Image (cartoon, rainbow, N blue to C red; front, side):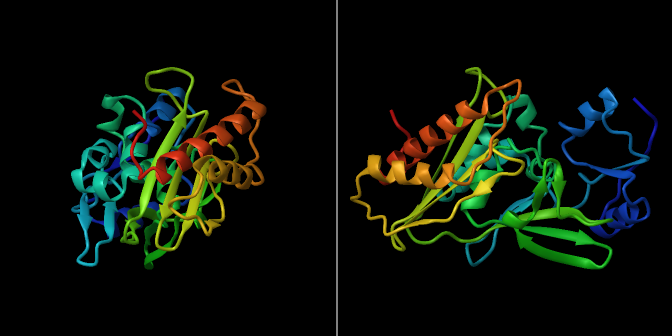
Amino acid sequence: MSSFRYERPESVAQATALLAAAPGRARVLAGGTDLLVALRAGGARPELVVDVKRIPGIGDIAWTDGGDLVLGACALVEEIAADARVRAVFPALAEGAGAIGSLQIRWRATVGGNLANASPCMDTAPPLLVLDARVRVAGTGGERELPLAEFFRGVRQTALGPGEMLVAVVVPRPAAGLRSAFAKIKRVAGHDLALVNAAAAYDPGARTLRVAVGSCGTTPLLAPALEGIAAAADPAAVGARLAELALARVCPIDDVRASAEYRRDMTALLCRRLAARLLAGGRRPS
């Protein structure tokens, strides 16, 4: 492990000032589940590590009076997965958070770190994409918000500018009756990275069904919504349409974990499973 300077700011302003003073040479430490591994392996050689965990409020899970969910960037994914209100209102998000690594990892990993790491197979991105989440970013010039769909730019590349850090994720109040779910294909029964993951959200009032797919391209993909989907629609037919829509947009690769062909097949399978589940009321299959 190479040497670096370590700072533990107590405000967002202090943190962004530190980052701005070392553009391209600083890394943010939140949970550390990715960064510490990279530091030990020599894959990351920053001059400065900025530990943001002590910043007040940055680890909170909060709700606005209007019903929006606000996740501080350092909110632990296990706390998100276990939160009763999150599980009731945004089940896809709770399920995606609960699918990350092992229990020990989930008690360290943060939602902001998972997103800012920008791995194509991250498990929080597909649920947050179908739920129209926005990210709140802070820099020395203040804060800005942008849709999560615009945050990812490539493998481990984001829209964060020099001196900026992700401070919160905002999930807007869902439409009445919204149903959402998450599903994942992995190599082993225990904890593992996703070969393919996906989340879908069905709005019975608007009669729309949306899907987002991860691990099938350089970034997680949010597909356009299927429209005119009645609650009594045939789940198999809807699932086939949803799969066709997703497959027209994914661009998987062959790698050591799976082939592109397998990923395409699993994308179609997850679309069919999610459509069947959401049109059945959103319940997990028994």
